[in-house]
Length: 373
Ligand code: ADP
Image (tube, rainbow, N blue to C red; front, side, top):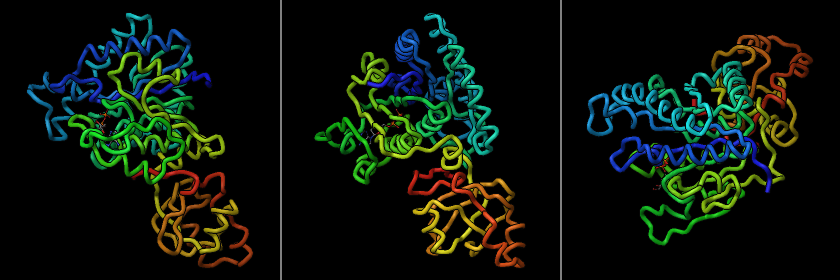
């Protein structure tokens, strides 16, 4: 068993709330007790916790969880503070200090802001603090958000170079079909590759309070796996689940990365999962082959068409002549410059000008690209 020093734990809304949808102090206490045990054993822990809306809607005057976005965001602005206050008290009773980091999807679009979050998290972790991360639910927009905390947790795990991601939900792990609607569903205990079978078992969104369902958890596992991080998925209500998940003796689903699987470095994780694309370039069929199998950078002469306006350093989609995206990468020159050079270049210039280095390119064959912007 490998020693897992740095662990990111994601707690879903259904694991923090009572039957009525409000925050359950008993559930939070259980989480804090178990996280404190990990801390006592010398681990570094990041908590990614949902629950802001649930913690706030009653104080906003609603009897049940509101439906509209502005009402939910208003509830989150009350609830986030209350949630952190509760966590802080609970962790302090164990001798640990908690901190709050609220992230917007736009914070991760810019590489320097993304790295900034990483630097802050590293200082907190090295100083023994328990950072509690959530999407900034009050300010995020429908058009631009992480969608769910499962993928946010996987991205944070990659950002801090975690040894393990633990996703806790209201279910024992991944079943071969939705156990809520199939009595004969069986638990899948070990997964080393996300196959089509696994994806289809995960189906659609599940509980009434959760937003992600099993599908978003599998999406998160894919991001974690591509970043070289194994994931445990299990039931938050089980006694000692957090400690046992890290000790590899919990009942649930372990998604372990294959040793042979290539993993993305920090730069490539940012390109693949966070950057957002600013335009696209359509490339010659031979170039797709050169990039994907021969791992050669993209040259100016291999470009057939440039779409969109982008600056040097932007991330763009690389498209083949069939219209399929083969990957994404950082361009070395702007779209205007590219078009100018394509129109009046010498052949030598076209051949020698590198548009994209392989170190700045992530192909779909290397990783699932789930930028979603
Ligand atoms: P959380 O709020 O904890 O993030 P969700 O409610 O979003 O969790 O997702 C968990 C739910 O996903 C389960 O309660 C279950 O109803 C549903 N689900 C769908 N397919 C599966 C499956 N194959 N295995 C396990 N759970 C599944």
